[in-house]
Image (cartoon, rainbow, N blue to C red):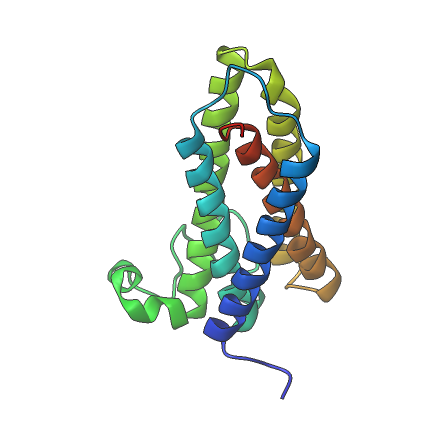
Length: 189
């Protein structure tokens, strides 16, 4: 068998991403100077990174259940915003994590939430003129934009392996850049 339970797949992937984030954090600790006074709210950046990790987990559910091969339209799922084959009440049940159309719905909407959260952080960083964070927040934005575009194309083209792989690989860059932004906003030793 080449398939695996989507819960096991997500745990495996999440552990790999946590290990990658910890390695990056230690690398940054050894090589990046963050001795500047003005920083952004660490908790807000941490919540952003947490949302990215949640999105990766739901993305593993999408991948494990081949949920990207249904509802190959965007921005609607078929003819409506919510999947045609489901009821809204089902999103509040634990079984929603095993329903391909609901998992795809969650993955789409968490992406929108991450984008909105990012834009709020971006605007606040630029309004406060936190020049030391411009590069990091711009890198996160570029990678987030690429990730969203790849996600949409992956969906529209029925989760073809090349696009799906590029979408998954770019998530590594999104986590890495988000860890960098978080690191820059952490307390100096």
